[in-house]
Image (cartoon, rainbow, N blue to C red; front, side):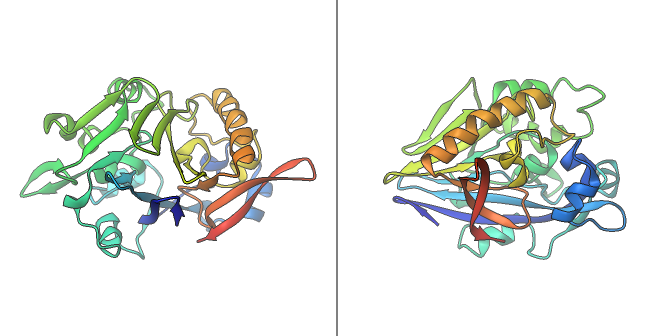
Length: 283
């Protein structure tokens, strides 16, 4: 995919099968299972989709998936079944001709384990950054929350996914919206976590947006009330989505979905006075 002179390459760290009730929150199972059928354990597929942004200035990776440090205990704690038919992230990057040394910047929308786990790996018994040249960009508020856990958050933040980045001096903490390179920008979008950030790409009069967990699936940007049970502040996420709904529709922006097993990219249109995602690239 191209946005002006910026290239967008979807890559993957495979798929996890998470509890459908967690992903759809208060939406009844009788409603969501018609859209996304679950297995016998009530689990639905959630793609660990990442995006490579190639600009004239830099090669940027958005998100790093769960990585290869997932233990059976972690899988049980998070109620996930791991499935990696496409290999993990480094294999997916290799199919695009990208090695870990080629990545200049890693943008992490937040630090939950399915977004930051591939940021570090174990080499010769040591935890090291997976992308040895890259600076990893994270919101300072997200970093603080990841280091001050409570009963709700301690099952999804794991320091071994990101603490080695600080030790290697490859961590860049942000305090609000930030420009990354020409045409690429980070915008804070609280709700799912307090420090969530969304990635916008603008070039040649075109726009693309990587929503991260502001909306797991395309249905969740169509319907404001559909928020996940994992959202730290669901009411704030509704208001965040309200702002982005209008913004995305007005600009006819290309929306990149992270977990959606059906649509990789789409556009938000108004049909019969309702918002609807029109698929541009299907999974």
